[in-house]
Length: 222
Image (cartoon, rainbow, N blue to C red):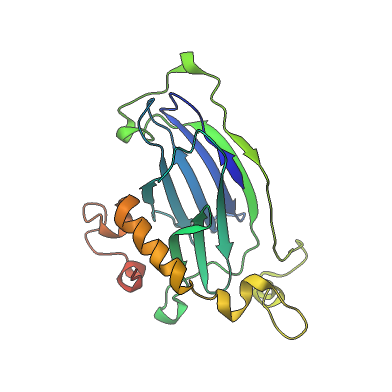
């Protein structure tokens, strides 16, 4: 999706673009854009829910002003990884580590959603800066939506979804080919650069929230 975010004073607002399945044990991949006062940087918060459990937030600032023009925000999801990309640059990878006993979202069909909402209890500087309604309406613009996916009608049983959407034999899905099971060397370098220069919060290193490091963090090395 190409998105242009709220110009000027966007404090207190959250613009969301995300994928989600249904039900209490849902899976979800979030882009949440946290507004700010005029001249202060927008933050991009990503989150991953697996079987109804989230609390995997990472926050980044961007290397451009996302209110001035449209930029592309993409999610690559296959059996091996979930990759969040901004203008084709990976900013986060959530790897399948089922071999370590860690659940991975792969057996629930997901839809694509977007919203803009007032979250001034937490969105901007920890909730210190509230939404200034005199600056309403707050408008985020979208264009160029593209989706390339394996369609899963409701009639497909949950235990058949992963098999139905896996590349095998005559049925090929480019995103599930072996070359897409991990980042390319160039993408890996991009991810290291982004994390070194733009990462401002990572749940994996938040010892106040998680005195014991979440188990998937021990195995995610970038």
